[in-house]
Structure formats: C-alpha cells, structure tokens
Length: 473
Figure 1 (cartoon, one colour):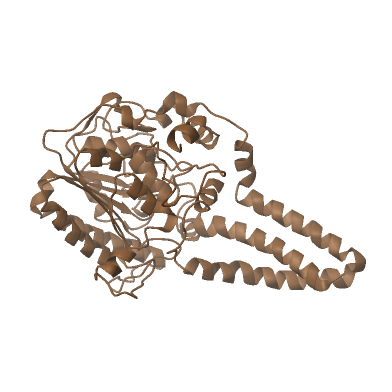
Figure 2 (figure 1 turned 30 degrees about the vertical axis):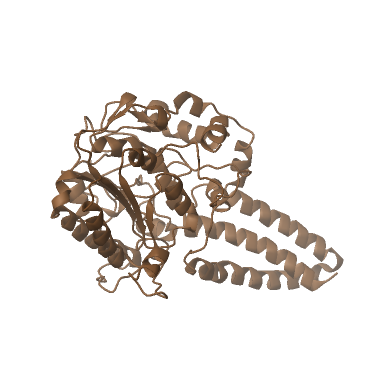
C-alpha cells in the first residue's frame, strides 16, 4: 500500500470532478457536443487566461483535497485505503460525466432521427432570385451579445440599458423578437459557441459532429456537402472577407470560411504580417475591438472601390467571457466588470454604425448585427440577472430591402438567420426555407413554431444518416 498512489488516485478523481463543474460554470457549457467539436478543430490562439484559471480553480484544489483526504484514509483505514480511494475515484468520475452531460450524449449515439430527411431544404438546390442590382452585405457578429443586457422597459433584464443606443436602433429598424419588445432567437444545441454560432447563422445547421469524424484541417474539408451564405454569394460574383481580432485557426473558423466562399481572412496573423500591428502585439485574444473597427473601416473602403458587390463579415471579441477586455477608453460605471465592458463595446459599435451610414456605399448596403451566441460568462449571468428571464441572442437589420410581415411574437432559432439575411438583401427565396432555416420576413412557420423547441432540440441531438452522408461526405 502506497500513500502516494492513494493521493494520485484521489487527485485524478477530484480533478475530473472539479474540471467538469468548472467547464459548466466557467464556459456556460451548452452541451457535451461542444467538447466533441473542439476535439476536432485547432485550439491554437486561445486566450491563455483559461488555462491559468483552470490551474487555479481545479488543479490546485484537487491537489489539496487529494493530499488531505488521502492522508486521512491512509492513516485510518490501513489496508482498505487503496480500495476506498478507487471507489472514490469511480464516484467522482461518474459525477463528472453527469455534470457535462456525457450520459445523455452517449444515449443519443444509439438513437437515430429522420428529422433532416423530413425538414432539411438543401440551399444548393433552392431557386434564389437576386435583385438586378446586387446589394452589399455587412454582417457584424458581436461576441456573446444577448438582449438580456438591455433594461426591463425595453425587454431586457438589467437596471440600465447596457445596449443603448443599439437597442433603440434595433427597435426603430427591423428586429425579430419572441415578445412584443426587444427579443430574439433561442440557442439550440450545436450553436452555443463561436464557430457553432457562425455556422448556424450563415449556413442554417447546428455543429453536432460525430465523435468518429475526421479532425478538420487543410486536408479535411469543413462540411463539403453544405451550401452556405458564403457559397451562394461567391457564386454570384461577390468579394468576400472575414475580419476577427484573434487567430482564425482557433475553433476551425479558418477552414469554414476558406471552404465556403474562399473568404479573404483578416485575423491576428494577417494583421501582424501586413503591418497593421506590431509582430509581437497581443491584447486579450489578439487585438482589441477599438483596432478591429478601425481595420474594418479600412477594409470596407477598399472593397467599396471595386466593381463587384461585397460581403464583409466581422466578429468582435472584447465581450468574450469570462471577464471581457477593459479598453483604455472604457468608463467604470457599473459594479460588474463585464457590464462596463459591454456598455463600452456598444459605444464603439454605435460609432462604427454611424460611420457606415455616412459612407456613399451605404445606400446599396444591408447591415446585420447579431450576437454569435448567448454569453458563456456563467458566473456573471447567474449573479447579475434573473434566472427566470428567457435569454435570446440580439439581432438588428439596417437598410433591409423588405419589411417583415410579423416580426414580433415569433419563435425562432439562430439557424433562421441564414435565409433571413439573404431576404433582407432583396433575394427572393423559393419556398422561404434554406437548410434548416426559415425566412423570418415571410409568414412561413419556423421549425420551432411548427414542432416546438424541445422536440427540435431533441431530434437534432440524435444520429442522422443525412447529416453524416450528405453534409459531411
């Protein structure tokens, strides 16, 4: 019997349990499929703060408890100590697996669904009629932007309106809501993190990849059977660019945007190589939103000079969990750090919107603002907002060619943004459906309005032959 072995066994158990609980609380883990996906994509470029916090909150705690409990077991139980430690390990691992939802995921490995065969409308086979003069598209994905941050009067859940004046701009323009006030889309499994959110909104499918699928890389196409917004606009002669303030390789975003539209990718590496920032510059995930919006102005003006229409997608980063990035221009107004970050970032976004509206190309441009997913800052959300409040992602359409028939009291998913964005540009969609998304400008029911959220979410978690063979072939 070895006390070091007993301590090690208990350390593994405690580490597994604390790490599982930490993943749920720290990341707001939406489903175990999120972990599976990140096993399949590159993780370089991640913010090292995650690793630092994991060591502090999980490794250190596991070591202390393992030494304390292991010593106690060794002294009091003698020859039975090792067996008790092994039982403890088994219990802790089971609790960890339950915490991250692995049992539900394993159960769904043996359940099949025909939901895709019955409801998937292949965007590559749908007749799309573009206006004679094609419009530019600028889609601003704001990290973790949800309606919760607005005040109660407008439909949010905060005392003040952290989204002001973007919330007002949304309500005065085209905005889709699940209520009569500020509201938005529900987040379904496979869309609760950045890459999942981006793919969901621009391609109308959730990222629920099988465990046995190949790792995404330069040699492994990112859903080769999928037709996305980028594919459609590239085929129509658009110039495409994707701008982010981090490394595009993280989460497989680089492969998605390269494989579906061959976007020019302006990320941390590009900014360094092209002299936009110093070679060793690093703030937060790469560079802050103040620089991002400045670079966006430069790139959009260059695109506007060309004869072809353009599709410019960008993703902010300052409001990323768990703490956000406090820019030097931010004002410390609220007691919560992240509240200050959100309010500050919204001011920068507003200035950028006003700049766009002052440009000559704006008349021929549709601008979409949306949250990529709900916030993962679980501690901030749970300690600041009412747990009963129904959280939804933010959306706003500026300069839309069409007006919605009924934008309020709708039940919809972020997947519905795919055809809705195209429709806002004046594109007529035969049948009003693309992939799993429904055009919200039309009066056609969404999948959630037809089947209910719980049923759709349950079916999409199951195994689909269509998903594997048609989309991932």
